[in-house]
Length: 146
Image (tube, rainbow, N blue to C red):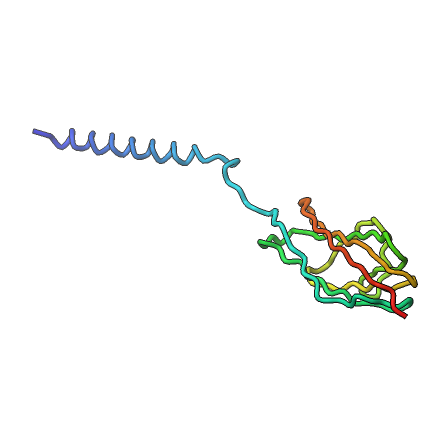
């Protein structure tokens, strides 16, 4: 026959076993196993642009950065390099960008303006990167028009 005291001991022992299991399962989760993703690859979409440009004319290039996820502290940057022809690239009415310099972007949707300073075909690459090392290259080519 099980007395009240034995029932109490069995209940107390069961509670200690459950408590032990709970503590071991909680302590087995380390801080290193908890991952919060803040590095999201991205794509850059470009609206259609003309294939030709005349010397002295300006072309508007509309771009949108589309990340695969959302992390508020992601910062995007732009740099460019022109390898054929001559021209200037700038954001709105700011000073023209210098080739290979890194410029922070203030928004994921923005417009660049390329002004031709050449009577020959022109080619340049724009690189968009983020503060996690993700990077996308965009190539632009314009034939000269009169």
